[in-house]
Amino acid sequence: MSQDIISDALNMIMNAKKSGKKEVAIARYSKFLLEILNIAKKAGYIEKCEIDEKEKKLIVHIGELNECRAIKPRFFVMVPEIEKYIRRYLPARNFGIIIVSTSKGLLTHEEAQEKKIGGSLIAYFY
Image (cartoon, rainbow, N blue to C red; front, side):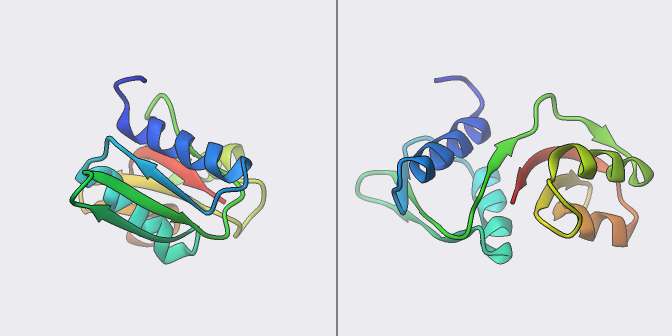
């Protein structure tokens, strides 16, 4: 296991999806990961995520997900450059989201473009 909690969790979700499972238990999680999963839940890629207090694990129920990955290195982008990374990471226009960490918190790439805020690319889902 690496030191990157986000990358590890998204890889575990993808491995569970590829093996046909509907849920996965993640042992290491953070508030940052929970925020990323909440954005994915709003977009429909994750059905729900809940914390099991007794076992101290995060249970993620997978929804309509084709792929999710962490973006490494975490590129810092300005608003005009976001389009270039949309073409790089997403398979088609209006299909999927890129999560951007901005000064206003975590946003999807569409919200960041609307608010004209740049930031650091974190992950993508489609």
